[in-house]
Image (cartoon, one colour):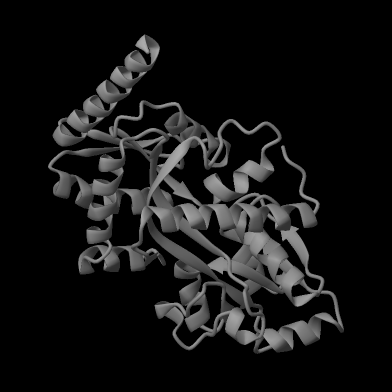
Length: 320
């Protein structure tokens, strides 16, 4: 009985301490770890949200860039941080659903080591073709692939843009040969030059090339049409139902962060994502704001973990 009473006392004390902490939170600046370099699209997204979130919470959000290992170093740092609401992290498709299948020795568990807070937004790719490729739709491209070999530009086998192409080929039951590049930017230029047939490219830097007729946009890879390319259908509505490949960005915290703090953060982030100025700032980066619950983010992570694991295994990509 004494042991039971002691255990109950400890539990109640812990709950009381967590409640007291949540009631006074935040009382000092909050650190937001971004596992990518300053100036990257993920960094800009984080700073847009951090500024407005700091205003709403009455405390500064200090953005810390901890790049390295494709985002794994910064993500690992969040996993090991104190679960007190003063360390948050920026997650994306790569850090939480690709890396676990691409790391030979994972340094964190994307589900057990973190608590999801809120989705921020998602960026689709645009399937852009060299203009002389005789295909003006997804179905025409599929038919063409059965008559001649086709290539697509890739930033490397472990990148989402490459996996978007792998998933497209798998869904369409065709063969596409990836041509790898070490950095982003050169891929689309080689499509313009005709050295590669197509690319799954990020929308903002590709828009001028599309408007100038230097590449042809035949589809976007998101679940909905992009406002920037309203006349371009999605891959799914072009005859490949269920296809989707987007780079989503989200906010999360270390596992064990008090539920009251998570709920407060979710409420504030969702308010930001309904703010027209924030939505417009994100849209300029090609990011569609996606407010939602913490559970919706958790469900998305779980579904994408399985989805991309299957794609990576089927493509024969070996963990490093």
